[in-house]
Length: 206
View (cartoon, rainbow, N blue to C red):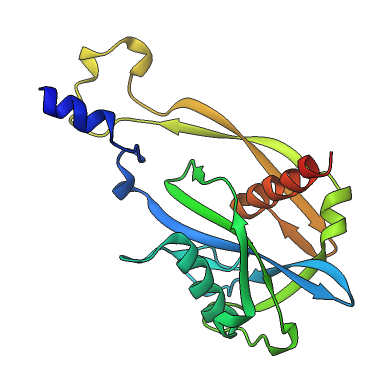
């Protein structure tokens, strides 16, 4: 066992059962509008199976052989119809392990040449921007979401304590943030990532 102990001592930890998650990366795009910093958002087409009509950041699935950073750049380029040279990654945020089986690698970055954006209509209905100052001076509304679990057929419930009986059981509550800016309602993982980004800015300037 000594050789295994040595192997374990030098091993870098990852996420257990990572293959059971949807692994994605997104970019928080910072753009200049009349000399002011804005954040760019996408509205997804209503015909999509995944998140139809929702407001989100550019991003998507991390493909085999690709780093999350490369995914964020590639997806932003494809979705907004711009070349990768227009995208500059500033740095990563903390990784988000979402309660619905998704792992998201968020990055902040800048996009130049806003006038050249030509969104892919198959993935993006439209784009819009909101001044960064709005988020720096506007706290999001906040509530709680709940995660429940139930065991599938065949699990021997009679062997575990009664609290794990049949049916759905609440196991976890998590913070839900949302913003309203004019007609735009920003919620879900997008608002959670955005809230974390704004907090990083505020912490830096304390």
